[in-house]
Length: 152
Image (cartoon, rainbow, N blue to C red; front, top):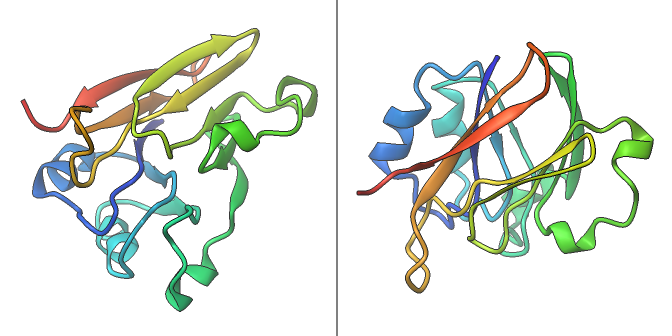
């Protein structure tokens, strides 16, 4: 499975992001959605699982949970906006991938059997950080991911 992972759109869904996510089997949004119409726009591309981030305080955002655990492509994925709030051992719970956002800094890190993935931020530029998303591959062997720049 090809999973598009996006986070921190902060109300801005760039056309480049929509084009990049085309062909994904599923899209994961790691929070700080920012505007109600972002998730429906992503759902026109592929099924979406989204969580609420710290800026998602409007009434519409209440339908999104703060954390999600979902099985895709034979892998268990735990999603939360801020990885620093992770208060359990994912490996002990059978989690294969932890998705987070919040920092706007893209990161791929493997600790033991768990892949930690922060796709960075796809919304408005913050400081000099890149505008990115991630492609997560599931289903054959260990989960693997790559960070993709949206803007050159």
